[in-house]
Image 1 (tube, one colour):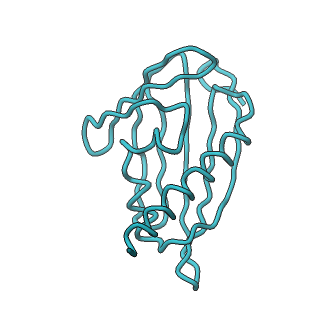
Image 2 (tube, rainbow, N blue to C red):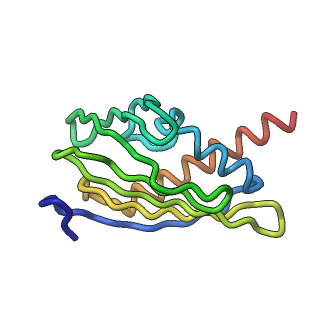
Length: 142
């Protein structure tokens, strides 16, 4: 896959987290916390409701890119993309499905010009998010 002359790699992964969909969706909207579960993102700065600047580190190189939220469907879906960056392109969609036991199934689809092992990264990001949200739920229950 190629976008604007950059070769893109893509991957999809799913995970079930032990937290209600409202809490999971709300946590995923906390863009400034992305470095806690997406290791390549080092810092996120909010510009407005739909635009963020992200500092990234990948393959021993530093990047800065603008992220734009394209779609928000509360407690169902969130989509974003990078904007006007000639060094890196990425798009992502995360979907949330409430389950009868109050858990949530999260599906993350990611395409990135940082092609190396995208599928392993998606799985790792989801595992990291699961730890983050479930640890918060345990703390909130105390």
